[in-house]
Length: 247
Image 1 (tube, rainbow, N blue to C red):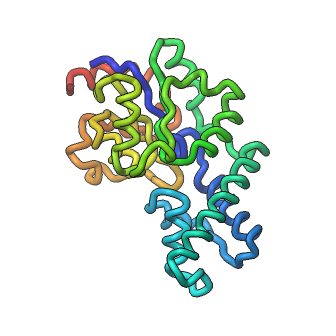
Image 2: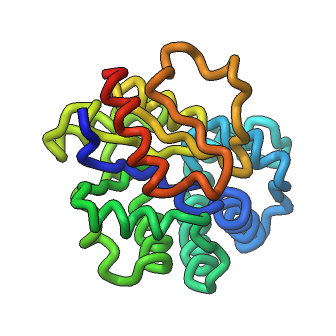
């Protein structure tokens, strides 16, 4: 089936937001709250295996002697810190701290020119998406995307397929008519669980998996892109035939 829509992940896919944005914003939020906490690049990489900022905070608190003792107090602190972190993240984005990954904006423009529908499918917050996309594409960025699915729209975050299933429902398209663009294993798992072929472009925190780690269930519906020069419309267009034959 010829692809009719591109479904874009956000963090790590559009920009290297995790290391240079979210991690920094969390540390600023800790400082704002007077907490002697900090996540270096290694620790944040470990926490990224837990989906969701509030969830990462709660997981980290389990290993801190100076964290609140009761679950209720930890939950309250996590919500407050996450709220402040989102404010700090928006400030970092507005200051130009995050740039689009090579080829991202060109591919969006070319896909639009070719008549492909486009959607954002992420489990980060709508506020964070708004901040980043406004900086990358301008105030009218939402006009470019027919569907926007964010963390507030789903109960279960990636690797659960709920976000992708919701996007398919809103687009009114079958899975094989879409292509998901992801950077991570959880994102890949979410898209494939929804039946959607994936264009996987590894990021700083989610490096390219070894070929044997790409389970047969993902092939031939997962294309691994490891070079910036391959992240182009020409590559996507050339793979249409292979996906169609595989379907």
